[in-house]
Amino acid sequence: MKNLRNILVTAFAVALILVIHSCTSSDDYLKFVDGGAISYTGKIDSLKFFPGRDRLKIKGLIISDPKVSQLRVYWNTKKDSVVIPINRTSGIDEVSSIIENLPENIYNFEVKTFDAKGNSSISQYITAQTYGTRYQASLTDRKIVSSKLSSDFSLTIDFATMDLTTGAYATEVVYTDNSNVQHAVTVPVTQNQLVVSNYKIGSKFKQRSLFLPVKTAIDIFYTDFVSKEPQVIDLTYMIKNNKRPFLTSSTDGGRWGTLADWTTNAACKNHGGYGGWDGGCCGNPPGTINLESGWGAPVITNGKIYQTITLEAGTYIFNAPLLASGSGLNSGYTLSDYVYLAVAKGSILPDSSGGVLETDPATLGFKRIVNTMNSESAIITFTITQSTQITLGISTTQGNERYGHFLSFSLFKKNN
Image (cartoon, rainbow, N blue to C red; front, side, top):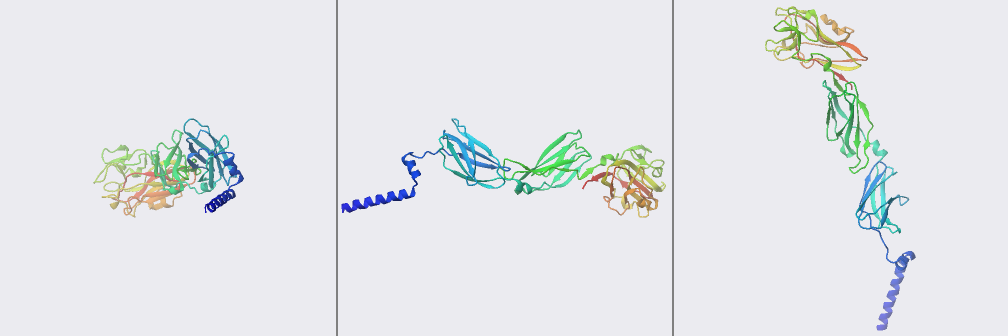
Protein backbone atom coordinates (compact mmCIF):
# COMPACT_ATOMS: atom_id res chain seq x y z
CA MET A 1 0.00 0.00 0.00
CA LYS A 2 2.81 2.37 0.89
CA ASN A 3 4.50 1.73 -2.47
CA LEU A 4 1.27 2.41 -4.32
CA ARG A 5 0.95 5.74 -2.53
CA ASN A 6 4.51 6.72 -3.52
CA ILE A 7 3.83 5.79 -7.10
CA LEU A 8 0.70 7.95 -7.20
CA VAL A 9 2.49 10.98 -5.66
CA THR A 10 5.34 10.68 -8.18
CA ALA A 11 2.91 10.41 -11.09
CA PHE A 12 1.01 13.50 -9.92
CA ALA A 13 4.21 15.55 -9.64
CA VAL A 14 5.34 14.57 -13.13
CA ALA A 15 1.94 15.51 -14.57
CA LEU A 16 2.03 18.88 -12.83
CA ILE A 17 5.49 19.67 -14.23
CA LEU A 18 4.30 18.78 -17.76
CA VAL A 19 1.28 21.09 -17.45
CA ILE A 20 3.40 24.01 -16.22
CA HIS A 21 5.92 23.48 -19.00
CA SER A 22 3.22 23.40 -21.66
CA CYS A 23 1.78 26.75 -20.43
CA THR A 24 5.09 28.63 -20.06
CA SER A 25 7.33 29.84 -22.88
CA SER A 26 11.03 29.14 -22.75
CA ASP A 27 11.75 32.88 -22.26
CA ASP A 28 9.42 33.14 -19.28
CA TYR A 29 11.06 30.17 -17.78
CA LEU A 30 14.44 31.80 -18.19
CA LYS A 31 13.18 34.89 -16.36
CA PHE A 32 12.57 32.86 -13.33
CA VAL A 33 15.61 30.62 -13.61
CA ASP A 34 18.33 32.85 -14.97
CA GLY A 35 17.05 36.38 -14.32
CA GLY A 36 15.56 35.89 -10.93
CA ALA A 37 12.34 37.68 -9.90
CA ILE A 38 10.78 40.10 -12.40
CA SER A 39 11.59 43.77 -11.55
CA TYR A 40 8.72 46.18 -12.19
CA THR A 41 9.05 49.98 -12.03
CA GLY A 42 6.50 52.04 -10.11
CA LYS A 43 3.59 53.08 -12.28
CA ILE A 44 2.53 56.69 -12.75
CA ASP A 45 -0.05 57.77 -10.20
CA SER A 46 -3.16 59.99 -10.66
CA LEU A 47 -2.96 59.55 -14.41
CA LYS A 48 -5.21 61.91 -16.42
CA PHE A 49 -5.62 63.01 -20.03
CA PHE A 50 -6.93 66.47 -20.95
CA PRO A 51 -8.39 66.95 -24.46
CA GLY A 52 -7.42 69.71 -26.86
CA ARG A 53 -7.47 70.68 -30.52
CA ASP A 54 -5.87 67.70 -32.27
CA ARG A 55 -3.76 67.09 -29.19
CA LEU A 56 -3.87 65.92 -25.59
CA LYS A 57 -2.21 66.79 -22.33
CA ILE A 58 -1.09 63.94 -20.05
CA LYS A 59 -0.55 64.51 -16.35
CA GLY A 60 0.36 62.30 -13.44
CA LEU A 61 2.62 61.82 -10.42
CA ILE A 62 5.75 59.74 -9.85
CA ILE A 63 5.58 59.12 -6.13
CA SER A 64 7.90 56.37 -4.83
CA ASP A 65 10.17 54.71 -7.36
CA PRO A 66 13.49 56.61 -7.69
CA LYS A 67 14.57 54.50 -10.69
CA VAL A 68 11.88 55.71 -13.11
CA SER A 69 13.47 57.64 -15.99
CA GLN A 70 10.81 57.84 -18.68
CA LEU A 71 7.17 57.43 -19.50
CA ARG A 72 5.99 55.80 -22.71
CA VAL A 73 2.54 56.30 -24.18
CA TYR A 74 1.28 53.94 -26.91
CA TRP A 75 -1.80 54.10 -29.13
CA ASN A 76 -3.06 52.74 -32.44
CA THR A 77 -2.24 49.20 -31.25
CA LYS A 78 1.30 50.37 -30.40
CA LYS A 79 1.98 51.60 -33.94
CA ASP A 80 2.36 55.12 -32.51
CA SER A 81 4.03 56.22 -29.32
CA VAL A 82 5.83 59.00 -27.50
CA VAL A 83 8.56 58.93 -24.89
CA ILE A 84 8.43 61.47 -22.05
CA PRO A 85 11.69 61.85 -20.07
CA ILE A 86 11.36 62.01 -16.29
CA ASN A 87 13.94 63.71 -14.07
CA ARG A 88 13.44 62.23 -10.64
CA THR A 89 14.05 64.19 -7.48
CA SER A 90 13.95 63.06 -3.89
CA GLY A 91 10.24 63.89 -3.62
CA ILE A 92 7.06 63.55 -5.63
CA ASP A 93 7.50 64.58 -9.27
CA GLU A 94 4.72 65.77 -11.55
CA VAL A 95 4.68 64.63 -15.14
CA SER A 96 2.98 67.01 -17.58
CA SER A 97 3.39 66.83 -21.34
CA ILE A 98 1.50 67.61 -24.56
CA ILE A 99 1.04 64.92 -27.17
CA GLU A 100 0.64 66.60 -30.56
CA ASN A 101 -0.66 65.40 -33.93
CA LEU A 102 -3.73 63.55 -32.70
CA PRO A 103 -6.47 64.28 -35.26
CA GLU A 104 -10.00 64.46 -33.87
CA ASN A 105 -10.90 60.97 -32.65
CA ILE A 106 -11.33 58.70 -29.63
CA TYR A 107 -8.05 57.02 -28.64
CA ASN A 108 -7.17 54.02 -26.47
CA PHE A 109 -3.83 54.60 -24.74
CA GLU A 110 -1.44 52.26 -22.97
CA VAL A 111 0.92 53.92 -20.50
CA LYS A 112 4.07 52.52 -18.86
CA THR A 113 7.00 53.86 -16.92
CA PHE A 114 10.58 52.60 -17.53
CA ASP A 115 13.88 52.71 -15.71
CA ALA A 116 17.35 52.99 -17.25
CA LYS A 117 17.66 49.19 -17.51
CA GLY A 118 14.48 48.88 -19.54
CA ASN A 119 12.34 47.52 -16.76
CA SER A 120 8.73 48.69 -17.10
CA SER A 121 5.71 49.17 -14.92
CA ILE A 122 2.46 47.33 -15.23
CA SER A 123 0.45 48.81 -18.12
CA GLN A 124 -2.29 51.31 -17.51
CA TYR A 125 -5.05 51.76 -20.07
CA ILE A 126 -7.09 54.92 -20.58
CA THR A 127 -9.46 56.22 -23.28
CA ALA A 128 -9.43 59.90 -24.28
CA GLN A 129 -10.87 62.09 -27.03
CA THR A 130 -9.48 64.93 -29.11
CA TYR A 131 -11.48 67.64 -30.89
CA GLY A 132 -10.86 69.32 -34.23
CA THR A 133 -12.50 70.31 -37.50
CA ARG A 134 -15.76 68.41 -36.94
CA TYR A 135 -16.33 70.02 -33.57
CA GLN A 136 -15.30 73.43 -34.92
CA ALA A 137 -17.79 73.13 -37.79
CA SER A 138 -20.64 72.53 -35.33
CA LEU A 139 -20.13 75.84 -33.50
CA THR A 140 -22.35 78.87 -34.05
CA ASP A 141 -21.94 82.41 -32.77
CA ARG A 142 -24.22 83.76 -30.06
CA LYS A 143 -27.24 85.53 -31.49
CA ILE A 144 -28.02 89.16 -30.68
CA VAL A 145 -31.63 89.89 -29.78
CA SER A 146 -31.12 93.65 -30.00
CA SER A 147 -28.35 96.23 -29.96
CA LYS A 148 -28.93 99.93 -29.45
CA LEU A 149 -26.63 102.92 -29.34
CA SER A 150 -28.16 105.61 -27.13
CA SER A 151 -27.82 109.37 -27.37
CA ASP A 152 -25.31 109.28 -24.51
CA PHE A 153 -23.13 106.97 -26.69
CA SER A 154 -23.71 103.92 -24.51
CA LEU A 155 -24.12 100.69 -26.48
CA THR A 156 -26.53 98.10 -25.08
CA ILE A 157 -26.42 94.57 -26.51
CA ASP A 158 -29.02 91.98 -25.51
CA PHE A 159 -27.92 88.41 -26.24
CA ALA A 160 -29.98 85.28 -26.83
CA THR A 161 -29.45 82.26 -24.59
CA MET A 162 -27.17 79.47 -25.80
CA ASP A 163 -27.19 75.67 -25.64
CA LEU A 164 -24.63 74.94 -22.94
CA THR A 165 -24.18 71.35 -24.12
CA THR A 166 -22.19 72.72 -27.07
CA GLY A 167 -19.45 73.87 -24.69
CA ALA A 168 -20.28 77.57 -25.09
CA TYR A 169 -18.99 79.58 -22.17
CA ALA A 170 -18.43 83.19 -23.30
CA THR A 171 -18.69 85.78 -26.07
CA GLU A 172 -15.97 88.31 -26.86
CA VAL A 173 -17.00 91.79 -28.00
CA VAL A 174 -14.45 94.23 -29.42
CA TYR A 175 -15.41 97.88 -29.86
CA THR A 176 -13.83 101.33 -30.30
CA ASP A 177 -14.52 104.26 -28.00
CA ASN A 178 -14.72 107.97 -28.85
CA SER A 179 -11.00 108.33 -28.17
CA ASN A 180 -10.26 105.69 -30.85
CA VAL A 181 -9.15 103.21 -28.19
CA GLN A 182 -10.10 99.61 -28.86
CA HIS A 183 -11.55 97.51 -26.04
CA ALA A 184 -12.23 93.76 -25.74
CA VAL A 185 -14.91 92.59 -23.33
CA THR A 186 -15.62 88.96 -22.44
CA VAL A 187 -19.28 88.28 -21.68
CA PRO A 188 -20.04 85.03 -19.78
CA VAL A 189 -22.67 82.83 -21.39
CA THR A 190 -24.82 83.32 -18.28
CA GLN A 191 -24.89 87.10 -18.85
CA ASN A 192 -27.57 88.23 -21.30
CA GLN A 193 -26.82 91.95 -21.56
CA LEU A 194 -23.71 94.05 -22.14
CA VAL A 195 -23.60 97.83 -21.74
CA VAL A 196 -20.49 99.76 -22.80
CA SER A 197 -20.06 103.51 -22.52
CA ASN A 198 -18.40 106.09 -24.76
CA TYR A 199 -18.96 104.05 -27.94
CA LYS A 200 -17.66 105.67 -31.12
CA ILE A 201 -20.65 106.55 -33.26
CA GLY A 202 -20.31 105.41 -36.86
CA SER A 203 -18.03 102.52 -35.92
CA LYS A 204 -18.75 98.81 -35.93
CA PHE A 205 -18.19 96.33 -33.16
CA LYS A 206 -17.20 92.73 -33.71
CA GLN A 207 -17.94 89.59 -31.77
CA ARG A 208 -17.07 85.91 -31.57
CA SER A 209 -18.10 83.11 -29.21
CA LEU A 210 -15.81 80.91 -27.14
CA PHE A 211 -16.24 77.18 -26.54
CA LEU A 212 -14.68 74.43 -24.42
CA PRO A 213 -15.80 70.98 -25.61
CA VAL A 214 -15.38 69.77 -22.00
CA LYS A 215 -14.50 71.72 -18.89
CA THR A 216 -11.03 70.13 -18.70
CA ALA A 217 -10.10 70.99 -22.30
CA ILE A 218 -6.74 72.70 -22.78
CA ASP A 219 -7.74 74.59 -25.95
CA ILE A 220 -10.46 77.17 -26.53
CA PHE A 221 -12.44 77.01 -29.76
CA TYR A 222 -13.66 80.27 -31.35
CA THR A 223 -16.18 81.21 -33.98
CA ASP A 224 -14.90 83.71 -36.54
CA PHE A 225 -15.13 87.40 -35.67
CA VAL A 226 -18.16 89.04 -37.29
CA SER A 227 -18.41 92.83 -37.63
CA LYS A 228 -21.76 94.37 -36.75
CA GLU A 229 -23.37 97.77 -36.47
CA PRO A 230 -25.75 98.57 -33.62
CA GLN A 231 -29.19 97.56 -34.87
CA VAL A 232 -30.63 100.85 -33.64
CA ILE A 233 -28.64 104.07 -33.24
CA ASP A 234 -30.26 106.85 -31.25
CA LEU A 235 -29.51 110.07 -33.13
CA THR A 236 -31.86 112.22 -31.08
CA TYR A 237 -28.89 114.30 -29.98
CA MET A 238 -28.78 115.67 -33.55
CA ILE A 239 -32.11 117.40 -32.93
CA LYS A 240 -31.50 120.40 -30.73
CA ASN A 241 -33.97 121.37 -28.00
CA ASN A 242 -35.77 118.08 -28.52
CA LYS A 243 -38.04 117.61 -25.47
CA ARG A 244 -40.18 119.42 -22.94
CA PRO A 245 -39.73 121.69 -21.21
CA PHE A 246 -38.68 123.14 -24.57
CA LEU A 247 -36.40 126.18 -24.42
CA THR A 248 -37.31 129.54 -25.93
CA SER A 249 -35.40 132.21 -27.78
CA SER A 250 -38.03 134.79 -26.77
CA THR A 251 -41.48 135.03 -25.14
CA ASP A 252 -44.30 137.51 -24.83
CA GLY A 253 -43.78 137.53 -21.07
CA GLY A 254 -46.76 135.25 -20.67
CA ARG A 255 -48.00 132.06 -22.25
CA TRP A 256 -46.52 132.23 -25.77
CA GLY A 257 -42.96 132.10 -27.03
CA THR A 258 -40.70 131.18 -29.93
CA LEU A 259 -38.58 128.03 -29.77
CA ALA A 260 -34.79 128.15 -29.46
CA ASP A 261 -32.81 126.19 -32.09
CA TRP A 262 -35.86 125.71 -34.35
CA THR A 263 -36.85 127.73 -37.38
CA THR A 264 -40.39 129.06 -36.93
CA ASN A 265 -42.00 130.82 -39.91
CA ALA A 266 -44.26 133.87 -39.65
CA ALA A 267 -47.47 131.84 -40.09
CA CYS A 268 -46.78 130.03 -36.79
CA LYS A 269 -46.09 133.29 -34.90
CA ASN A 270 -49.78 134.02 -34.70
CA HIS A 271 -49.80 135.24 -31.10
CA GLY A 272 -48.54 138.78 -31.47
CA GLY A 273 -45.33 137.70 -33.21
CA TYR A 274 -44.78 134.65 -30.99
CA GLY A 275 -45.88 131.08 -31.39
CA GLY A 276 -44.96 127.42 -31.22
CA TRP A 277 -43.98 127.40 -27.53
CA ASP A 278 -46.74 127.11 -24.93
CA GLY A 279 -45.96 128.05 -21.34
CA GLY A 280 -49.02 126.19 -20.03
CA CYS A 281 -52.72 126.71 -19.77
CA CYS A 282 -55.98 125.02 -19.01
CA GLY A 283 -54.54 122.04 -17.15
CA ASN A 284 -51.99 121.20 -19.84
CA PRO A 285 -48.29 120.93 -18.89
CA PRO A 286 -45.96 123.89 -19.52
CA GLY A 287 -43.13 123.94 -22.00
CA THR A 288 -44.76 122.03 -24.85
CA ILE A 289 -44.79 122.77 -28.56
CA ASN A 290 -48.36 123.82 -29.28
CA LEU A 291 -49.60 125.35 -32.52
CA GLU A 292 -52.91 126.92 -31.52
CA SER A 293 -55.31 128.85 -33.73
CA GLY A 294 -58.54 130.59 -32.76
CA TRP A 295 -59.66 132.08 -29.46
CA GLY A 296 -58.54 135.44 -30.78
CA ALA A 297 -55.52 134.13 -32.76
CA PRO A 298 -55.49 133.79 -36.57
CA VAL A 299 -55.81 130.44 -38.29
CA ILE A 300 -52.52 129.03 -39.61
CA THR A 301 -51.83 128.38 -43.28
CA ASN A 302 -48.60 126.64 -44.26
CA GLY A 303 -47.07 127.18 -40.83
CA LYS A 304 -43.72 125.48 -40.31
CA ILE A 305 -41.42 124.67 -37.39
CA TYR A 306 -38.33 122.71 -38.38
CA GLN A 307 -34.61 121.89 -38.11
CA THR A 308 -32.20 120.92 -40.88
CA ILE A 309 -29.51 118.23 -40.46
CA THR A 310 -27.42 115.94 -42.67
CA LEU A 311 -27.77 112.16 -42.48
CA GLU A 312 -25.76 109.33 -44.01
CA ALA A 313 -27.40 106.66 -46.16
CA GLY A 314 -29.71 104.40 -44.19
CA THR A 315 -33.18 103.83 -42.79
CA TYR A 316 -34.40 106.15 -40.05
CA ILE A 317 -37.27 106.53 -37.61
CA PHE A 318 -38.54 110.00 -36.63
CA ASN A 319 -40.91 110.00 -33.68
CA ALA A 320 -42.90 112.71 -31.86
CA PRO A 321 -45.19 111.65 -28.97
CA LEU A 322 -48.18 113.96 -28.44
CA LEU A 323 -50.34 114.78 -25.45
CA ALA A 324 -53.61 112.85 -25.70
CA SER A 325 -55.06 113.25 -22.20
CA GLY A 326 -57.32 116.10 -21.17
CA SER A 327 -57.82 118.52 -24.03
CA GLY A 328 -54.79 117.75 -26.23
CA LEU A 329 -55.56 115.60 -29.27
CA ASN A 330 -58.97 114.67 -27.92
CA SER A 331 -60.30 117.99 -29.19
CA GLY A 332 -57.41 119.08 -31.42
CA TYR A 333 -56.70 118.73 -35.14
CA THR A 334 -59.44 117.20 -37.29
CA LEU A 335 -59.63 115.73 -40.79
CA SER A 336 -60.46 119.17 -42.12
CA ASP A 337 -56.96 120.29 -41.09
CA TYR A 338 -53.65 119.39 -42.71
CA VAL A 339 -51.24 119.02 -39.83
CA TYR A 340 -48.15 116.91 -40.46
CA LEU A 341 -45.11 115.55 -38.72
CA ALA A 342 -42.81 115.46 -41.74
CA VAL A 343 -39.34 114.78 -43.13
CA ALA A 344 -38.17 116.16 -46.44
CA LYS A 345 -35.04 116.57 -48.53
CA GLY A 346 -33.55 120.03 -48.56
CA SER A 347 -33.57 122.95 -46.14
CA ILE A 348 -37.30 123.58 -45.67
CA LEU A 349 -40.50 121.56 -45.26
CA PRO A 350 -43.06 121.49 -48.10
CA ASP A 351 -46.34 123.38 -47.77
CA SER A 352 -49.24 121.57 -46.12
CA SER A 353 -52.33 123.41 -47.46
CA GLY A 354 -54.72 121.02 -49.17
CA GLY A 355 -52.43 118.08 -48.35
CA VAL A 356 -49.90 118.89 -51.10
CA LEU A 357 -47.08 117.84 -48.76
CA GLU A 358 -48.10 114.22 -49.24
CA THR A 359 -47.22 114.26 -52.94
CA ASP A 360 -44.36 116.76 -52.93
CA PRO A 361 -41.24 115.09 -54.46
CA ALA A 362 -39.10 116.43 -51.60
CA THR A 363 -41.16 114.63 -48.95
CA LEU A 364 -39.39 111.58 -47.51
CA GLY A 365 -42.08 110.69 -45.00
CA PHE A 366 -45.04 112.12 -43.14
CA LYS A 367 -47.65 111.40 -40.49
CA ARG A 368 -50.92 113.33 -40.56
CA ILE A 369 -51.93 114.46 -37.06
CA VAL A 370 -55.63 114.15 -36.18
CA ASN A 371 -57.51 114.03 -32.90
CA THR A 372 -58.46 110.35 -33.30
CA MET A 373 -54.93 108.99 -33.47
CA ASN A 374 -53.00 107.27 -30.71
CA SER A 375 -50.56 109.60 -28.97
CA GLU A 376 -47.64 107.23 -29.65
CA SER A 377 -48.38 106.70 -33.36
CA ALA A 378 -46.75 109.86 -34.72
CA ILE A 379 -43.87 107.86 -36.22
CA ILE A 380 -42.20 108.20 -39.62
CA THR A 381 -39.84 105.65 -41.19
CA PHE A 382 -37.82 106.88 -44.16
CA THR A 383 -34.80 105.77 -46.20
CA ILE A 384 -32.06 107.71 -47.97
CA THR A 385 -29.51 106.11 -50.28
CA GLN A 386 -26.71 108.62 -49.84
CA SER A 387 -25.59 111.40 -47.53
CA THR A 388 -28.44 113.91 -47.67
CA GLN A 389 -29.45 117.20 -46.12
CA ILE A 390 -32.89 116.68 -44.62
CA THR A 391 -35.40 118.86 -42.76
CA LEU A 392 -37.73 117.54 -40.10
CA GLY A 393 -40.50 119.08 -38.02
CA ILE A 394 -44.13 120.22 -38.26
CA SER A 395 -45.94 121.63 -41.28
CA THR A 396 -49.52 122.73 -40.60
CA THR A 397 -52.61 124.31 -42.11
CA GLN A 398 -55.36 124.46 -39.49
CA GLY A 399 -58.72 126.13 -38.88
CA ASN A 400 -60.33 127.97 -36.01
CA GLU A 401 -59.95 126.69 -32.44
CA ARG A 402 -57.35 124.03 -33.13
CA TYR A 403 -54.36 122.90 -31.07
CA GLY A 404 -52.21 119.89 -30.20
CA HIS A 405 -49.31 119.49 -27.80
CA PHE A 406 -46.02 117.90 -28.95
CA LEU A 407 -43.94 116.54 -26.06
CA SER A 408 -40.63 115.48 -27.63
CA PHE A 409 -38.80 114.46 -30.81
CA SER A 410 -36.50 111.50 -31.37
CA LEU A 411 -34.51 110.15 -34.31
CA PHE A 412 -33.16 106.62 -34.71
CA LYS A 413 -31.20 104.83 -37.41
CA LYS A 414 -32.10 101.21 -38.15
CA ASN A 415 -29.31 99.02 -39.48
CA ASN A 416 -31.18 95.71 -39.77
